[in-house]
Image (cartoon, rainbow, N blue to C red; front, side, top):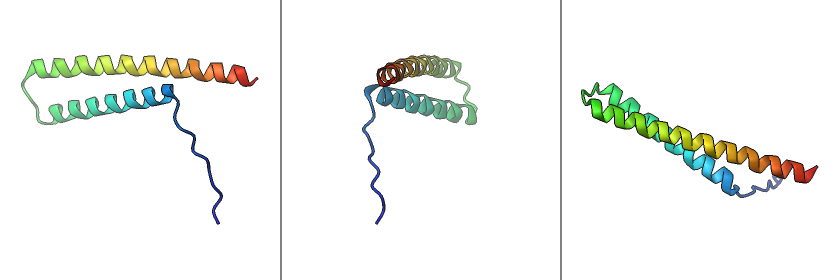
Length: 78
């Protein structure tokens, strides 16, 4: 019989961070596709760059909020 491991649900901060990271990965994959087809649409490339920049900013905010959330939990446990 295997030992049961309790999987705790993700916190709101963890969920948000995971969502933002996934979004950024998807945008990077889109950018790689556009680069691979050697599209001559400069506006498309700039739009993708803008979306990646916003997504990266959103991810960094989510990571900082998660760090803050974990710091509070750690201090409460001490």
